[in-house]
Length: 249
Length: 302
Image 1: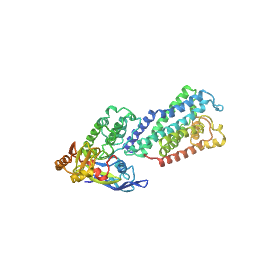
Image 2: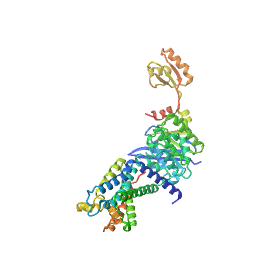
Image 3: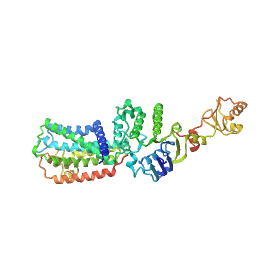
Image 4: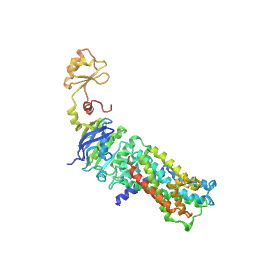
């Protein structure tokens, strides 16, 4: 990649990051909702987490939720409005290439996720009595899961932004977010759901991501291979869909 | 010398309607060229084909000899584009937008200087969404110029600007021409086309109706008229018969007579002899407005 391309991507990624952090709704969905969920259900013991302390169950799920917030909801809605306000069209008349714009968007999402992970783990460790699993942490599994999850959810968010009007993206992204929160094994274990619903949930992208993060953070889980396969299929399918539907205007 | 922009037989159809219907023109390098036409004439579609946003249904477009879609990367590096509206992040400041766009080009102009030139130095740190319509337009102009383009295409550049900003924008565009930059603009302002451009293409319903310098167009098309003003309502046919010249009403108490300045004495004498008090006889101002009216049969903003 040429130095000029690196300069263009860096400038665009910094701009994307600034705009996300400057947008109140975006900050609410990427930081507010996952943190409220984590703190509330850790301190108020109303959810069934067989034998585990609530916070031990919640941290991996809330990390998965944070990825979904940043990559699908925040990115999708922001991109939808950029199309509406002709920001993308105007960028299309500059030397910034389409793939450079997508790389910049993904870099800005990864930066947001890094901040989210630091904040969530920091609060869980410092304030909620979360015990880090220490040696049992499987770092590569966590990074792989976050990478695949980001690709899957960013692909879905960008596909919505490419296909729907801005307000349509706003609505669909929020509905999908709520549905995947409930079907993601994030706030409560999937096996509390009726068996057919749980089976369906395991084929959606949220539950495999939460499961993989749970495994990476030391919980025993037997479905790592299947979860990786499902999430990888979602990552490929969603990015293909996004590149097929993407429009500058 | 190769024209900066070549348009040959351009056709673009939307929903069965030919919005651009076989348009051809050349923009000479280093010139200011205006596409003048009413709303819906096909101006924006034409410039968006040149910018590479639209795929022509037929015909060819070249910018500095290159195809704006197939040789996209080469074209965007030399082309500065000003959209009719939008284009900026709502929460970004003019300074951030200009720096972002500057970073896309190898040799950008100095951003604070550019913002000062377009009169945005005082609002450079304000959010885009809080700017006035005219300020947003001036930021779009700045974004078109930040990469030192060889060709700039401006869609209705002064729409929404106050008179002072319009004059400043005209000065900037003349300054670009002095540095050899080619300017293609669309406008529905007669004075903008007449006073700013070297060449005007009058277009309507997707076709070029006339193409020449403003002075040539006016000289060739403008027939001399006298404007008579009176407090009375006149019978146009009667006046025409009496004067032996065509007469048309031009609003309340205003009548245009197809005669030159040499006929002023004869015309006033006829009104005096007919007992019709008149308040003035002057030569009617000829200009693009009238050329346009003759070409299209309507006023530009009807």
